[in-house]
Image (cartoon, rainbow, N blue to C red):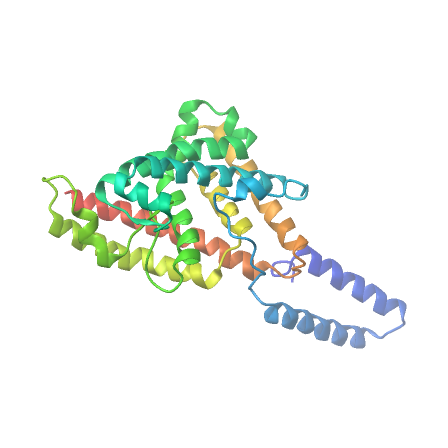
Length: 316
């Protein structure tokens, strides 16, 4: 059925029929063989595992060891190196803005991460925002060609989405056994520590109400998304593809045909390289895996939208 099979499947079936005809098989035998072959191919696709061999975890050391020799997926390779630089910048920036006591603990190696607080959250988010502008400029030629205002809008519009994807990618690596998340590069958060987070909040903040809202959002959105991420276990390349697709999203905030064309072009580039990535890894049937990865982005987008709506209601 042309409506339910891909071009390759139809082409393979056509070749199979022609080969059967050349052997002098009857039409009835050919039809039976086609049915058997179709069922066999379907069974292979159905039993093909959705898992994929893990790749090295991406962090601040990635910039030092990223392999630039791969020409099959140049965009993903640029993103990999740029992400390593972004991580290094975030690590150094956050250590430079933390308290003297926390900085000393980092320096002595007695802690790897610190508990995020109300006052450290804002500068950490600024570091991430500025870093993302450079990250995307290093990764995409088309991003560099945009005006500063267009770049700002693209990053600002989906900043929360970038944060959540990065947060979950790093959280399932460092804290796979519990609900701890990583709001920034060097900090962690758990609902059991919400009072500690709000301890240095401004006097006008209703800490009791804020704590309830944070716990509710965390349990409804973050925990479910982390469980989904943990199940899929996206590789470094898949994670970078998600970040890229989050940037080149359907930005209704920019009413510009040229921008829309640029978005469509770069989404196609990312998807094409993701297909090549699976082929390089020797994965013939990757439709299920690709679906799992893209569902991560859809679910995070829904969670981000829900959180924005909740924040508006809470502010009222």
